[in-house]
Length: 328
Image (cartoon, rainbow, N blue to C red; front, side, top):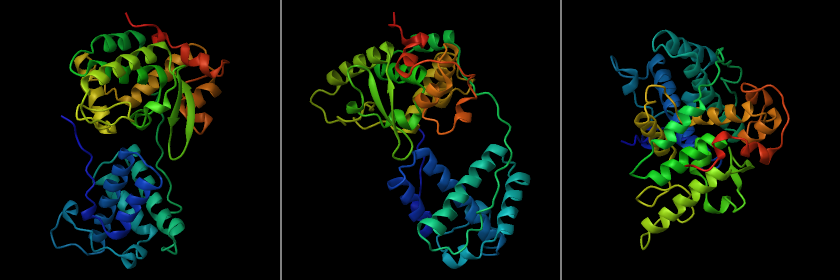
């Protein structure tokens, strides 16, 4: 079953609705990022109404409506109110450091939007809010034997599409939102691929032989299956309805394919497959600076979680993945 990330803008106050629309249309934030902003800020402002005595007596925080919040209420929020909220997250809701860090990001982005972007808030109460300390752990990834088991387990329905999705994740290390945004025109016959990253960022990677073969097989399937039917001719990955796959849809595909292959209890997501691709390339001598470009990292220290510095070239690096061979 596909789980939909539902954002109910009718439950938002005007400034929150405008903030979400801004990040959806201008900043081109991913579906998951928008949903995180929505749920984090809904909880924050419900709690603000609660501690300021604006809710009904005995009402649960989750049931407090916030559609009546205005700029006067927002301007009344202080850093002490915010600290009180994070005490609530820690002691009452038992949020982890990672979850609290995400909520800090959502809050800082919202107040920055009001203070800097729209200039309707004179002072940003979250400007000096610090992130909780998070212990960095090595990313989870699959070994090569497990990857081969996974790929060999893919069967009908939607075998060609799902196989292609997983081959690209395992070989190229692209992000989930980058995969769902792929258009046919982004991929050239020689394997050169334009990846649309975060915001307006773009980068070039190279599909190896395994990716190109899987893609060709999937394209042949699409032409036969959708002959005489209406479908999105631009999107690479579409559902049987003919519409572009969403991020949540692809996450569910990966989850179900992992489960069928016997890896359902490992929590292996598209992001873990990205880690897998990065680890494979590093082990085969891909230079850390090249790996940074392939993965689309802004900072080198993000990439160094996988690596120690060695040398290579960008295009040949993509072809060093052991799973770039023809499938048997």
